[in-house]
Length: 283
Ligand code: GUN
Image 1 (cartoon, protein in one colour):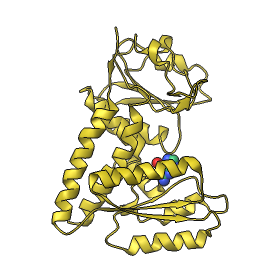
Image 2: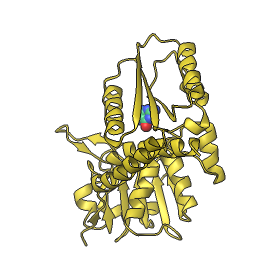
Image 3: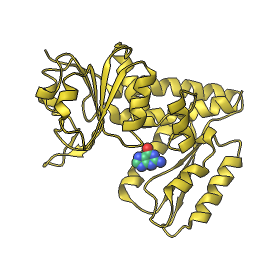
Image 4: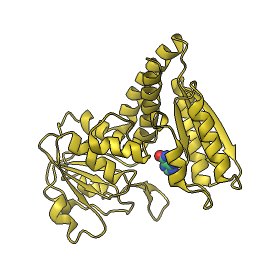
């Protein structure tokens, strides 16, 4: 069997067109959707991420407010900017790019963002809503993985999903989203003694570890859906995921490529969250 590809570029394009249409509808009602993006310091990777987020906003007709500060910005100054964005009804989403300089406590910063504007879905309140099955903004990467899974037409209900990784931004919310979709969920991590025992039973595998070739063909059940969240570099500097793609695609039923799978969906879901926040604010 050769797995069908789950095309994150194509799905992103479709979903961004929907975002653009929703943004246009809000603009017509005099309520243009807006995302505030704050970058503190000069981390090179963060600069690229932020640039891509702002570009995506522009392409979809979402207004972006970009504020960039020197790494010497104090925590109090950053909290004051967040308070101003919270109070500004024309701003619907607030994104503070991480990591922050060491003298700023990221938990304090994330907690300061109004829940209704927490488009990263990283706050304890947003996480609690997900745990409790309440409406709320969901972290973009696992939310994007759910959309990729749904795009296959495979219903997660009753399926065994194995999530590899337990980060607050991907693994844990991923498990909760799959649970909400009625999957039976196993979460594996670095202290799981025999990963393959679990992955071989999985109808759905989400690999979110950050280690190349971590999921091999002999660890995958024939026909399984494999979603690769990994973003690693091989020895030639080429982008690759956590999955041994060429081998696993011979066994799996569906697979996301890297690049072109989960990656494009992350910014797309940030835009979707911004639109959801803007629409909720405008009713
Ligand atoms: N740094 C790396 N990824 C992210 C993200 O999704 N959101 C924020 N705020 N910072 C990040």
